[in-house]
Image (cartoon, rainbow, N blue to C red):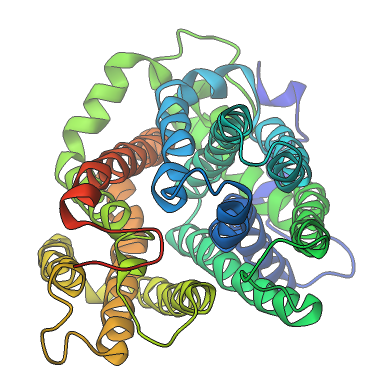
Length: 438
């Protein structure tokens, strides 16, 4: 498919003039807002589930490992997506992947708390929830990988804003949970008829965020930014590299496109292997430690749901700050990222010590527990954005989307290794569902 069959003349877009009544700065501001919001949509529902662990534990009192088993199916699904995302991008456009993912995620958001209420305390109900979480992970990650590949081809700052949006969504959803708790006076002291209603209201507010994201996506696809900047870049790539630039907008109708075959994946992986390794290790660290291990610190006198929501709030806030710090590309390189990644092993050691030896002075204080979460979140934010910016820099323009896809693969492989490796250690450390330890 040639460009003339789909778009207006390249000269029209090379001018990069905003259409009538618009200023270029306004177009860029809208693009930033779009990437912030649409990035948040990729993880909003999972954050809602994490903030509702107490609700799900009330519904499934036959399982005391909700914090550890709930992440597993969605992590498996996320890894599966990264194996097939390049093929999906051959047959489904960026817009189609985003729209279909958000619609399905929205449906899942509505039914999750209802499933827990209707099939509570049954093996069938728990299995059904796990299957639903698998599909949540699949479509969450299809959207996430698609946005990552898309922004990898535009500019590093849009990648940063997309990742910041993911973190902001976590904080927003966490705040909404606090509001719902206060409004409906929801406690974990017992099951009442108000439980489902309050949680359903909470999940419906998340639905509103997703629907807003869908509207913003349609607006973005019609925006001056998209028409002036994205299409302009495509014509530039088309002139230099043939049809490869069409990957940014639409599926490749030729599945033998050299930019999307297995050999090219291996070439890109070879060129970016060190950065992919750092991404992998950092994600193993994160999902080994968070949320289960980080939330396991015993804090006498504090309700479990208060500790859960407050620690997630602290993590989300400083995760955003860390990601914002990661935007300043001139202040870091591969050595910086390596040192930060190694330093995080020290933080994880403190997480473990807080559980196995809660009597150690200083480590046994609530302040130290929250400080450790702060350091963990800050370093993760910097590493997350920094490596997502550094990785595509290692390859030529026509391979940047694939670099973005492979980076997401490293994220999900690290996620699943971390999530599964904490399960057997949970028994060794005697971590229980109430955040206790030895």
